[in-house]
Structures are given as C-alpha cells and as structure tokens.
Amino acid sequence: MDVKEQEFSRMVREHKSTIYTVCYMFSNDEDEVSDLFQETLINLWKGYESFRHESKLSTWIYRVAMNTCISADRKKRKQGTKVPLSMNIDLYNDEDHETKQVRQLHERIQRLDLIDRALVMMWLEGMNYDEIADVIGISVKNVGVKLVRIKEKLKQK
Image (cartoon, rainbow, N blue to C red; front, side, top):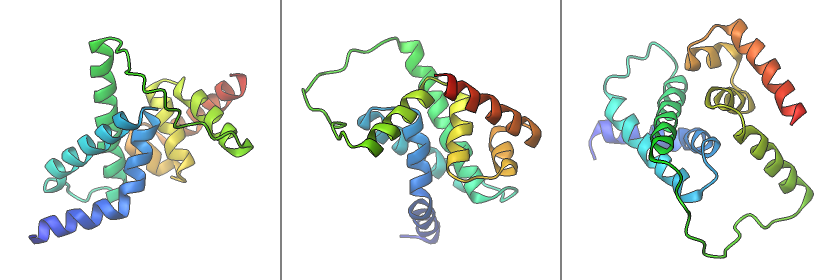
C-alpha cells in the first residue's frame, strides 16, 4: 500500500461515521445507504489528490458526501418509483421509547427538502454555523435563519 492509499485509508477510518451519517439522512434503506457510502468513498478517492486544504478536511468530506447523496437522489427521482422486494423482515422492530423518538425525528427530517435535511444533520453532528455555511455555500446568518425555520417546521409536523 503506497503513502496515498495509507493516508486515504486513515482519513476514511477517522471520518466514516460522518460519511455514514450523511448517507443515512438521505435514505431509510440499508442497502441504499451502503451504496451511497461506497459511492461517496469513490468520489472522495477521485478528488483526494485535488483537495487543496483551503477548508477543513471534514468540511470537504461533508461537501463530497452531500453532493454524492443529492446527485443520487436526483437520479432516483428521474428513474421513477421502484417497488421493493418484501422479505417480511422488520429490521426496525425495536419498540422502546428512545427508539420510537429517534424514529419519529428521522421520519420528520426525511420529509424536509434536501438542503434542509443537510442543515439539520450537520447541526445535529455539532458543526458550528461557520462550518455549515462553508459546506452548504450560504452565509452564516442564513444558516441561523434556516435552522430556526426548520425547527418550526419540525414542531408543526
């Protein structure tokens, strides 16, 4: 394994939960999340040498992951509705109170548009407004305004 591969492998290990979180926010399907994760890794690898370190590595990873997921979502919408194969397996059958709350929050977030979902996800991940603004490409003030509006939407749902 050459130096580039070792550095990339270390980066993926350090940021895999971030990548997974972004992918999970764009799909409920375990297979689709895995596909999005793999596609994100491919895109990160393709862009790894051209990363100029003008922003934080984590910001770049968020941006690549989000762009990958948004592109996949657009492709999926163009292809139309697919009928899933039912295996009569309920992977989400845990019924404790905490799991129900997490599931409800996830369902509400899934009803938001793509950019709003991304904003919420980054905020829940503990990113500050400056970092979120860098990833999304909007002003810091706009991040705050959008988050207030999103919180109101979530309360109403």
